[in-house]
Length: 407
Image (cartoon, rainbow, N blue to C red; front, side, top):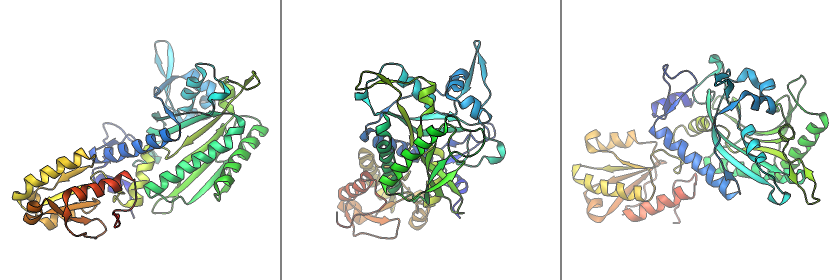
């Protein structure tokens, strides 16, 4: 089975150290390249969809989370407060209270709605040591989060659009969800708000699922404390399910923070807050991608996209010149030096790279390369400029395919 913890360490993507602490992995250069590429894809997708990006601090006063409801419903999963200058500060367990305050800082008109703000921001969860594992359960999280402030009439369409964004991301990443779950309230005192609020929110999410043409399963007891949500479920190699992406409807926090907008009638109204995450936490998303692909990432996401393989020392200068061209085109490439082993050994060592370019005396003299694809295909030798352009085209399209035979 593909265990992301084993693969991640073997490929030097991430690791941990007892001096840093359990549940606090660090990212090595190749893992950081995967993470950075994923984050940039998310930001670009959000910009295209009309989101504005923000930054907010990982700390907040305890009072902030008392207002939001996190302190009374979620404090067991939060780190203890820190006494600083007579105030109690906590590491945030969620980004939504900060975004609610950003909305509240000025007056809004209905003409501005929906207002979409997004952030890939840090948050912290006081997970027990026994449940920590690799990147899937950590204490310091980078969350792909967004909040849409909209009118009641806009909620279903915004939720449907969020589901479409999630679907496009999964296609680019090669991720196949196992099911969509409509997570509803269960019994007990975990939840806030009236039954009418919950019923209305669930109806809006159901409308979005139906509009998207998605099959789903309604499950009680899996909702957030402030509202129901759509969970996009994925499974690891052992068949264990986890939630990767979510879309949530929240009537509670707009009420708690006194959020308003001026409607077409000139009166003040309460917006609805739609929480939306395309890939959830970056850590869990990368863990799933490692296991999904066994470390053989789609070309656009691979930490090293092209390995240049000079046959002998004589071809190294040409390989270095090609490396510079790769970097100029935004490709992640490296040269496998002949001193590091035989050509066969170097090719095997780089087997997870999407592309390898073998450079012998003939290719060097002709300004060409003999390309090897990860799936075993070997196109005819062609000019180096054409090879790099075609690789850049596949990478730029964020395709899961390695090669366009028609290009």
